[in-house]
Length: 349
Image (tube, rainbow, N blue to C red):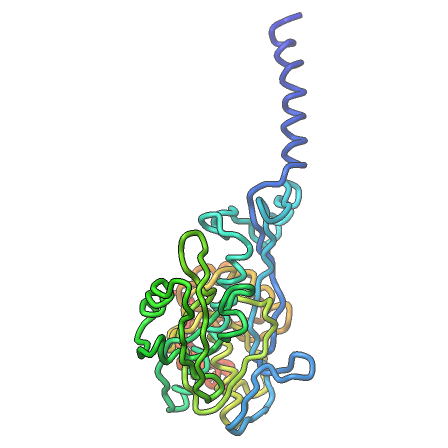
């Protein structure tokens, strides 16, 4: 028996074993595919997605679609094998990413969900503030509760969107003051004075020792005193901040007479900052594909996502660069009046 024959006899079973493992063993990758779009000018069941109390509303038609991405995980949180990853990679509308890119530093699904919930609350409230500013009525951010962890001391005492006024009798100026008060409390309750639904109340929360640190189980973020109540009634499973721009446009459209889109179908994405600027998001290619499938005519793109957006096949779907909510509003109005009008573009000048 020759040396080459021996090598082949040894190598073939090893190769077959490796191929079998490749097709059976989950691989550390995540896949992105186009998700659903939600018309935030419409309803979720019988309930308006944008609901307002204390101000006139105008339901004048048209569509403003927030866009989403389906993220399918592998590694510790899921099962993705080579054949499925290859099929995803070959689909023009889908994408494959290393697990650590989607979940950096070994972040757990629970941490992701908490972060998504915090981002969604912050995004909705900031979107409301930006919409009001576009109407000429500015509100300044203060400090509030953006998340309450179930089973922790704050659960049942503090609520999401409680605006924090004082802790142990001292006016609150920043989040570090809250952290210091919780750490200094020992086994004694901490008194929080909060503004909730227009009423000032005091609640007491006794910290719990978790891994050597006293905690009450809340996350803090910007909160606002709005002159009237605006709620964004979206499925809490759709987390994250990337719908901020579309929320802000929908709130503005609901609070002002006349249809912003003139009956047309507009989709988009982008985070929103308190100054109205639009920030980048992930999965832009899949979001454009989802909007295209659901019949959108115009898509609003954060400036930092323009290069990715231009790679997507988009027959009949016009891309518009949205630097700010104000720019996006003006672009929609100009396009609704004249679909051939000159609009901010992702194309290089």
